[in-house]
Image (cartoon, rainbow, N blue to C red; front, side):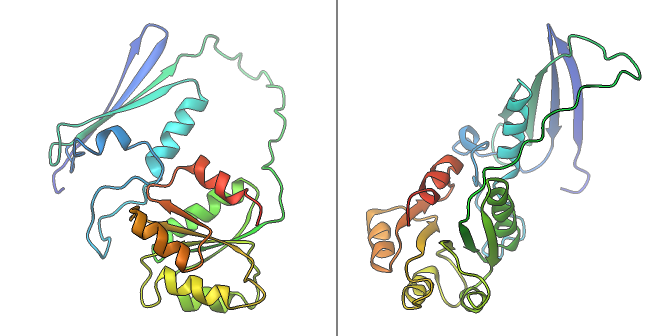
Length: 232
């Protein structure tokens, strides 16, 4: 908020360094706090999403910190009380010698596959970031932000899999799935519904619309990969 503050501190704790980032912002509700580092977790937001996040940033933070042998935690007393994030990382055991050339590291390439994935989500940033994540896993991706745009894209792109947000404007995900099933060139594509609704009736409705799988937000990345890797 206006005149808000972000404070960054670093302290040594044994062989670790703890970097804390404390803000005076919106805070984190108690029921959300245990889940903030999960992929696609978001706090409640308005329909126009003017203040909504993507639900991916903190998951990336946790992954990067863990790759460096560290850990990250979050604390908040609730909505409106601000938040504190603490990153714990091991200190370097040796100081590199100046001008010493480090050995070259082998290049790490994503797993290759020939599967095309169409992502349809009216949240453009979320669609792009999900596409980039799947590209790093070896998939070829395209994004669309509503049903008509997705159908038009089929003229130049043949998806093997399609991830469809249900809450699309105009033509919702159910209707889009029914249209896709009627197009011979993509009728056999694997369709995955991504939605905030996870009741049995919602799963049945997705099945009736032609979806092969139904994933509830926040979507676990490993679960998503397992669904995508199932044979079409």
